[in-house]
Image (cartoon, rainbow, N blue to C red; front, top):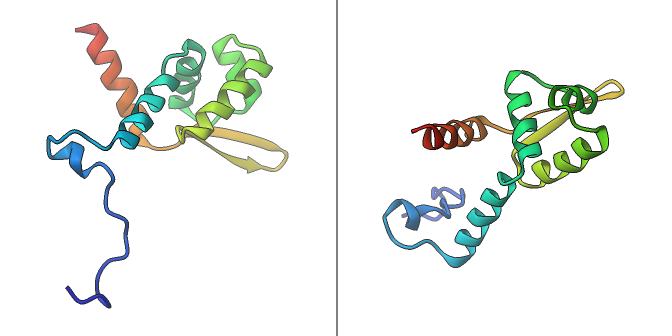
Length: 115
């Protein structure tokens, strides 16, 4: 392959997992960390609240019956895990799901426990 025309995109770190081989230890560690984020009921409530629309911390707190302080703390964890994103709208900060993968994970988990 010509180096000048070769793609500079990083290969998927998950290629080994897709092929049936045991993934890299680091990749397994990252996956375990991701699933740990889903182990908190408050974080799950926040993710479900964000399925509907973008929400502020106040709106999330109201929708989940959780204090604003607790919501802020959990949002920090969700942002660090790339499950939630935010944007500034004037003086407000609105939160939403980072991408469709989050919905897929929630749907798959719910399907699994409801079988």
